Amino acid sequence: GASCWTSAPALLPRPGRKRSSFDVIIIGGGIVGLASARALILRHPALSIGVLEKEKDLAVHQTGHNSGVIHSGIYYKPESLKAKLCVQGAALIYEYCNQKGISYKQCGKLIVAVEQEEIPRLQALYERGLQNGVQGLRLIQQEDIKKKEPYCRVSDLLTPHTCSQGHFHLGLRPVTWRLSVNLQEARITLLGQ
Image (cartoon, rainbow, N blue to C red; front, side, top):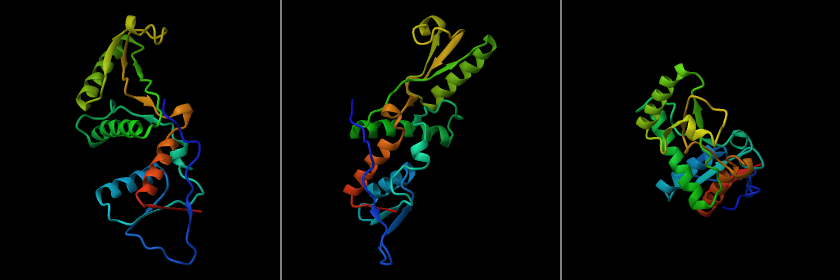
C-alpha cells in the first residue's frame, strides 16, 4: 500500500498590489488546472507558470467532491475522441498513481443483463469495449460470477479496469496534492487566498 496525503501543501498568498509576472496563468487549483500546469511544464520547461486558486486549499470544489471513479471507456462510440481519451486517460492516471505511490482500489465493474432479451445489448457493449481497447474486458457466465455477486442472473460483463480511485474514499485529492508538490518542485507558483 502506498501512503496517502491527509492535507494539501500550502498555497502562497496572492500578491497585494505588487504584480507577479508569469508566461502562463492557469485559473483553478483542481485536478484539471494542476494537470494542465504539469502538461505545460513537461512540454515547455522554460515557461514561468502560475496557478491561481480562489480558495485557501486545492481541490475544494469539483475535484474534492468527485466520486473518483476512473472509467474504462466501454460506453463510448468506437473511434470517437471520447473513447480514445477515456482509455488513454485511465492508463495514464494508473501510471501516475503507481509512480507517485498514490493508493487506489481497482475493484472492477459488473454490467449485468437482468433479462434474457438484454443479452444482445450486453454482447454489443462487450464488442464496443473491445473496439475501444478496454483492458481486461471479458464476458462472464452466471456460474463464474456467483462468488462475486450471488444474486446476479443470466450473463454478466466484467470490466476489471473500471475502478474506484482513492484510498478510503479520498477521491482525487491525493492525486491533486501530489501534483501540486510536483509542480512546486518544477518551480510552478501556486497562488491562493
